[in-house]
Image 1 (tube, rainbow over the protein chains, first blue to last red):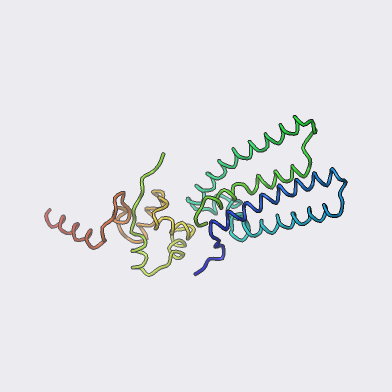
Image 2: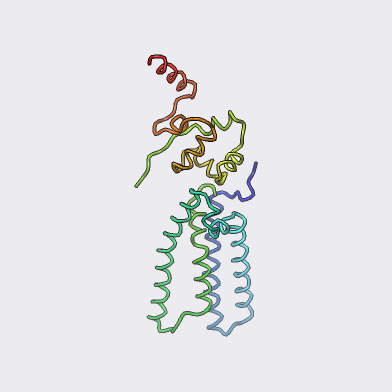
Length: 142
Length: 87
């Protein structure tokens, strides 16, 4: 019987890449819009990339149950799932710390002041999805 | 530390009992994919889970799990019988 959350690892990896590329796209378009004072075309592109982000999020995190698994309480996971989550949280902690440091240092060096709210929102999204993305990336079957 | 590969007979025993992975998973309280991982020998269960499985099948743990590749169960039972007979 085909499982509801079945998606090949290759497809999962592709959608994870699309999801994180859409964040980069949102940020790039945001700064382009800020620089050119938000022409209509840029607003449309920003909206399109936001839709892509939501669509890929549903496809890779919600439909595959990755989001549910990464946000479930310890009591609702079995020992293998718990082990998976602990490993992925360990990796995502290191990755997230490095990325945040690079961004904060980048802003400090460029004398841009504090980070924008859009970057903060993207980092928050990144922090919440990274453990699930690592499980989705590494595991054959979820 | 990298753990040793654990061989097991769960797939055979499960088929003999005529139950699905999902049913076995529900009985012992794990996700059904975990049963698949254990059967494919891609995941070593904890001692507690191994005991739960052996209790369910009503067999000693060493008849279900081994660090060496397992022989067919019938051969193992004949060997065991012979050993008992010799004693």
